[in-house]
Image (cartoon, rainbow, N blue to C red):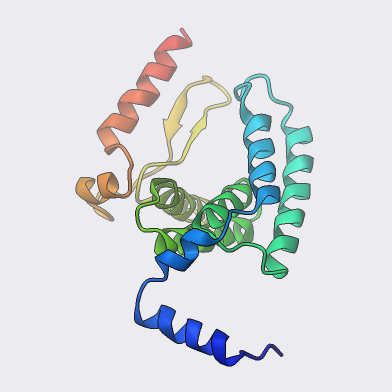
Length: 190
């Protein structure tokens, strides 16, 4: 069991009373976590057509294991750290990975409400949780490629779950903009 010192208790109470942005700004992001996130993104850089997903899945699992170790050790402290950790768990196959990604991204957006990546990742993780549960997504961030036609399609979306203004407040395009993007991607395939 962990006990708080008087200084820790004071800090905790002060943080509950007001944002601790000044102190949080003095904590450097975790360099190991930043490297793990960069490796995650590098694995996806070539584009989905030329990626060996079996190899990437193994690397993803290793990265999730390392991030879980950092989380258990209390080494994830800044909004940037939480975003990086969330992105790595967002790429997990299990719904529990996506649920953790949602929690981490939500934490990042609470630590730093101006962090646009945190807001976007929160919406993406929430949509992925819904899609994995067989329910319509809210924000329109999840799409897949039809194996027969090769065309990209947006997963089923509940147009009444959130408004277009709420989508834009999360830093996302409107549903019409997303559909236009998918249409353009599909037109390039012809």
